[in-house]
Length: 204
Image (tube, rainbow, N blue to C red):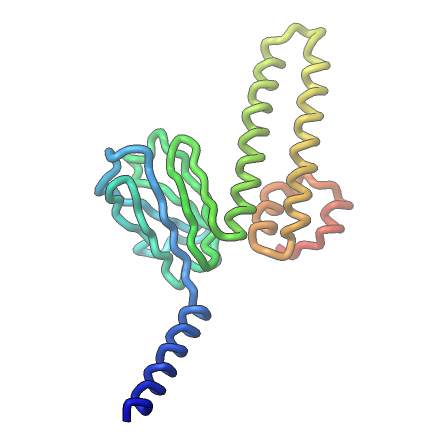
């Protein structure tokens, strides 16, 4: 009799394990820089299209939150943000809701890592942030420079931009078959040459 009970229990455990493996959801676990955000709400909202009501959200407790993404929002690009009055000084954060656990830090410079696609997305965001800072500094130098210095600074700016778009192209090329590659491509398509676009063959 005992063996007869053990077999159904074992079978049920296997079913639960297989179900968990085949229906993995997306979970976003995050931290904030101080306790002044405790009891405030943090939201994940779609990057494009209409925002479903209610949006995915959770309350912050002890500088942390754990946000479970709804099934209808899986495998989508979205933005992590706080409420309108609380988001000052915090950088909104792009997060793709592929299955798995994403670790995020919300601060003046935010980041997200943990799943393969979000790791790629974070690499691009860091590269873009570096480029934006350097490009801003060069634009300011051009404005402040004498006329005879502007040409050399403009050439430096062009070299900086060319290096950035080469790096972006390589990121897209390695990820052209996933949603992150397609997303980054959609933002930078106008900067790619016709030959690069043809080589990528990305269907938008």
